[in-house]
Length: 498
Image (cartoon, rainbow, N blue to C red; front, side):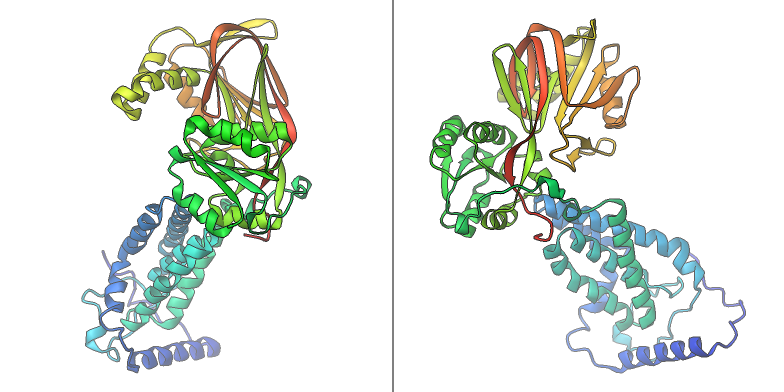
């Protein structure tokens, strides 16, 4: 690395305001150097070094992600994205626009000085920008985690003046740039708190002080004991029934007979059962995520008891659409997705082998078995023509996604089925991957996407598998997929209550 301060460049001419500000900056730097900082000597220089190249913030992001909560993972990702934008701006524009030399180290006690002095220009402070960007990015997604990170970020920024490598104005400018980068990232990728339901979706639902009137059935196999305990602490008058997976449906039916609000804690399959029962009984539904993916709860903005409990006590709820499939006398609902073709086949094959060789190996084996031949798992009649398909996917609401990133719904009551198909042909794996990369807006010879309110499929062969919210059933003949607009009342945190 070479210095990017050109010492041969002529100094700028006099400017009264600028000269006064620079003189004030120098006086503040010298005052900080002369001040005794109790307890700072063993901490701040090490902290400053740990933030070199963003190492400290990458470690902090890893620690956040290890907490395994969706909010913390999103906060970590947003913090790193903000840091990256701030660093890019500093290195491409900031340092090369204002070519300010570093402060003279004479006033700074030797014990504070860094062993290896930076040789880049002084304005603005890259360390302060990275620290502020990461902390602000985390705080925009999760104020609680942001409050935990903020003191560390402030200490890193302060350490740059303490160790004598930056003037105070360098640090302030860097911090301002970092915060600006975090807000710029939020402008490009909104936080969950910004994605709130429209006013037309708000529903009348009973407020339950301390959970009085809620009967919540928890699937013990979902590994959600901590979340159930948190909800019980927050809503002591709620009735909570914990049971094995085989008993969940029966317990939900019993609960619906005595509850003012039906609650459920489990994965998407368990939530599917609860939604169907709540619909039949005309009850509002409260969902506490307790499974692996929890798409329905997360798209509602409910991630844990801290989101659900206040919504229940205030009566904050919305109306959401429900999907329904019909095949002859067979009927079912789906809150997330419904699919025919290769995915249900993969699920069946995986389940067949998973208890013998484990889930991941079973998934690989299932993919090899299903995709290896020329036989298409699905042939349907569309507009009088029989067409081979590898996959037909229908989402309950429009899924927004970027590439292979997991899809999410911004409007849970848009009246649309998000239908995507992968046409039959050679190289099924390549076709499926291309469809996944293309996302929701695509139309090609290999795959297509469209939003409709109802879809009829004719000529479905007997024994064809249909997967809905992770469950699998057999269908045949005419299969109808349709929306039940705003059919279900569900509790969720509303705008202004986050």
